[in-house]
Amino acid sequence: MQRVVALILCTTFILIGDCQWLQAAPTHLFKIASLAPAGSVWVEQFENFAKEVSEKTGGEVGFRIYPGGVMGDDQAMFRKMRVGQLHGGGFTMTGIATVVPDFRVMAIPSLFTSYEEVDYVKEGLLPTFKERFRDKELELVALTEVGFIYAMSTQPINTLEQLQRTKNWSPAGDPISENYLKALGITPVQLSIPDVLSSLQSGLIETVYNSLYGSIVLQWFTKAKYVVDAPYGYAYGVFALDGKRFNALSEAHKQAIHAAAGVHFPILLKKTRDSNSDSRRVMLDRGTAFEKFDEKTSQVLQEKRELAVQQLIPESLSKAIYDQAIELLKKYRSISPGEKTH
Image 1 (cartoon, helix red, strand yellow):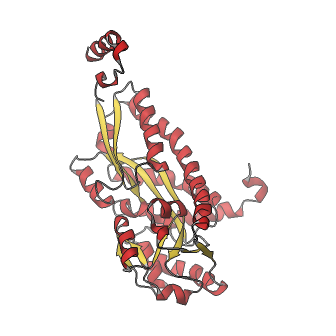
Image 2 (tube, helix red, strand yellow):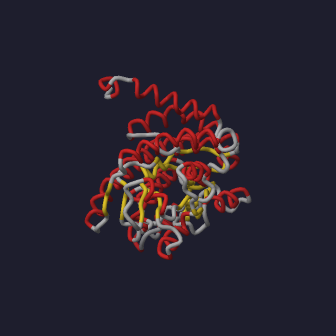
Image 3 (cartoon, one colour):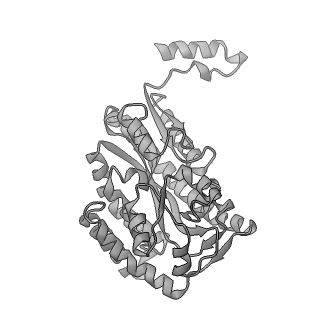
């Protein structure tokens, strides 16, 4: 009846302006938070996703997003989900892995060499990831991507010795990054993402790790003007909803959410990768120097990876998920180039 009344009022007053204000509020409103800044490709594409869900459910399912970290970091967002202040979020791997530890497996440094490898392993791990999230009463709606991340510093870095002499940052709550840097002889300064820029400005840290686009969006590139031009690792995240609230929806509404995610998050993936590519040109134009590690340092980075991983199992990462990821990676690398294109 409420919708009928709204329609009649809209028809009556259509000549005097927009009647969007008369539409009924969603029956199921999901309040979503994210560290992604307003205006970024991540937030813009999420808004497109939310619009489609609203349309496909006749306005019964809606989303309200709180971007830019206004709800706090990942841990704060998750705590607010547990008390009902939020109903989901766009989480970084680092943040949500404190809840779902196996989700951090693809962030192991020096693991991937191409996005093709990333996509193959990600597709193979997705069913396991979904199961792990549901075990924690979370619904994994879509994986998100920051992209390949690079070491970025306020001073030139070409060797392991130079890297060791700088004040390195490690995301708070990320045992993979912390253990890997320690294996390299580095004791990192742990900070949450919102604290990084001010710490770069004050000199508390000198070397950070981010994607090219992420460094521009978060303005880290204004201080860290030297980039090691080889992927340090792969950064990603997840859009997840409170499992109980999601399961309270009808099957049709659940399907509408997943269907819309299947359309809009692949678009987001492409936009993110395009943005990273474009960011390289922007950074070059702004005076960023892209340099290479020497061959000896590159070899050491590979060798220390396995040592760091073994120290993480089983407390921070299960052997099963690590073995699954490595097996998928080996399988992809064994496929002939001709078969990979099909």
